[in-house]
Length: 331
Image 1 (cartoon, rainbow, N blue to C red):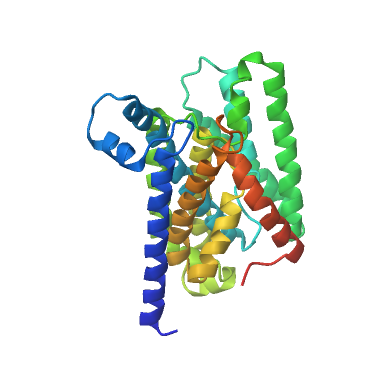
Image 2: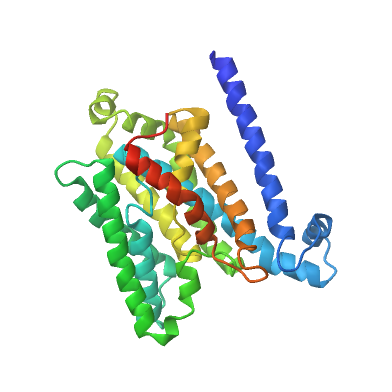
């Protein structure tokens, strides 16, 4: 495929995905226990008339939709960065223990230090770093392989999750986080949007800016050094970006799994291995996945809400098992 045709192909895919996302946003603000037509929902965004429908859209569904877009984009971009950093197809915030570590520290911080004037995002960043370091240490001992990483990640995930659930069981005040632990955005509000927006903008914009260096890093350390790249600085920067993206997402939506594992593979299948395209397409696809998963989650126990993490697990588990059994990326 000549360069012009390749660019035209990517532009066509981008346009199609944007249309799919717009349709998902329309569904997200109009579908639910109280069905609201899209025209009514759209009018509620621009014309204030104080109706019940407008209150539902402006205070419940709109912030929920924004959080879904940002969390999906964050987790997908974090997964793409982790897979490039480790050159491992099974790397993702969940498999690497980042989500479990962040969840543990958030729950521990909320329960054990309820009066502390510390943002929940700080606890999430700290836990994400701890979980990731533990899995990386065990998974890379004696040489990292996809299966070894998966086993180390699952073991650490279960270990940290056991501690998290123990804290919840032993503290009645922690009952409210049980729904959040399954990965949920149904209770999102404008405060959550304010929490995640700056971190999402910082993490995604810097990851896009570093996409060229990330592509070179994926070629191997020797090649990256030969091309004049400082791999230590790149690895450190990418690691911090993963903590920012995954940590802020867990802080507002809980440990939503499989988005960071599944989406980067789809993006590479669509646009190739160049991370200048993989990262933005991953972010877009992640937003699409979580927006539509959130719509589906509303019908699992209709008219009651279900955690969106249930839907992503239903989609991602078969894919994870496929990758673990093959031990390779999709080509």
